[in-house]
Image 1 (cartoon, helix red, strand yellow):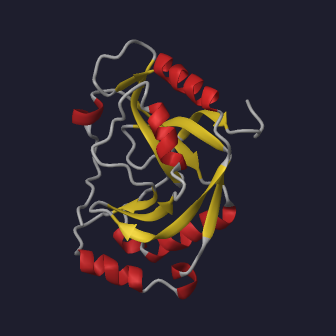
Image 2 (cartoon, rainbow, N blue to C red; image 1 turned 60 degrees about the vertical axis):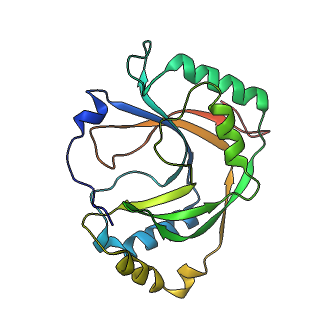
Length: 208
């Protein structure tokens, strides 16, 4: 597994601050408690501090700017308005996702998300009409538990996954999604908190 260095990444942010994305908030306390328990089980492998709220990344927009874009990974407020208008016209209904099992990327531990009806893919396709997503990898819905702080063998992580208590291995949760959130985190703060900027409520959910 690949560790994450605790440092500023000026070659990435180029002095810009707010890195924007669409995401799904995790507000169900039972799911939060479950994720906290998982994170505690793997705590010796994970980088601290970590103040980022549990969430499911939906679409990575780029660095939020009030002006016209300068860099390829800039994202303007006018583009946000275009995305919101497209989503409003689609009038997506609320939907449910299933929380899956624990797994690992090379740099992070995560919980998989099962989207058997492809709700997320459909929403992402509509968001992509306005701007290209800023992402290096194919989209794989998940909830990140943490980044690795050192180099570990995959066998060691898999062994730790296999040692999860039975109640966590067999846990089954469904997440009801009633709104989408557009927000950002501060690029200079590693694993810093997410700041919500706007919500878009789905179907007959209450709007604001």
